[in-house]
Image (cartoon, rainbow, N blue to C red; front, side, top):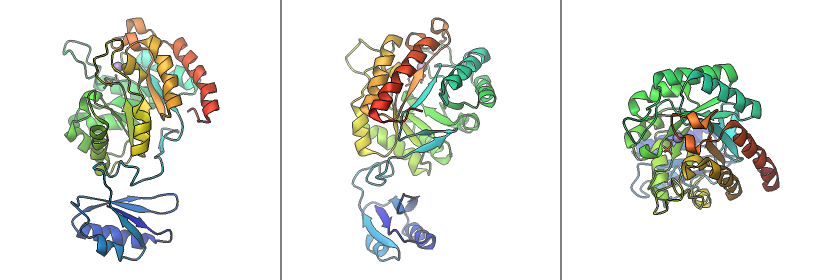
Length: 337
Ligand code: PEP
Ligand code: MN
């Protein structure tokens, strides 16, 4: 259910409704809006309690939410969500997140952070903890990698997007990260999602490699149900019969997600194609499709990368891509960030 307060509802009336929802044994989620506040109700099986809520002062209406992903749904929050992160904004524009697949050493991270801030890119990706298919592949620098990311942030001011792989490390990663990335393999790690729901850091939730849109949005609901409203969805390609690209980048999910949810959705054209030469075309397509941004792999020397070199752009290729997005964003009247 969603309790819609009227435009003149006072903070006391809003709190009284929240308290009533708690007394009914449910959980209230206060959602401030541009003109009025709504209160999402979770934990209820049906509309029990609706009549009592309807009679309370300041209540305009109590509507049933028909989908399972209640807080994620556009039925609950008709305006698209916009998050302020590390001096930039995600949602309502086209935000670029770029950087190497992995933190490999301090030099390459500082070099990348300086290059990105020089271009005007405000968020850098780089994994300290890497979920690798083979246990013998480079697993990331772990804690040492986090320290390098913290230094890059201190020295350049760039915001950090980095992966959190498990519950045990979540608090530690959140000390450094401005955005906590959940990888495709962990999209249905419900204990991790619940943990991230308790933190007050934006979460970038990658779509599972075989997840339906409903499974993906329900995964986001786990985070939001814990009280963390800042979830960014990320399409990174799914498994299909096709083998001409590493994954099949499902750009058709962008308008679907925009229809079903108020959360921003960004595209990962790097894991989506697996090949650097295909990344620019899919990046521009993502902008044209109405996505809220990109997360793209960029490495100072892709041939020497310890992970995902084949799909990483070098600095010049990234600069060319970035420059090509500007006129397209202008035509589409989208703010490039
Ligand atoms: C990554 O971003 O480097 C990564 C491991 O992505 P995914 O979880 O989409 O495979
Ligand atoms: Mn990668």
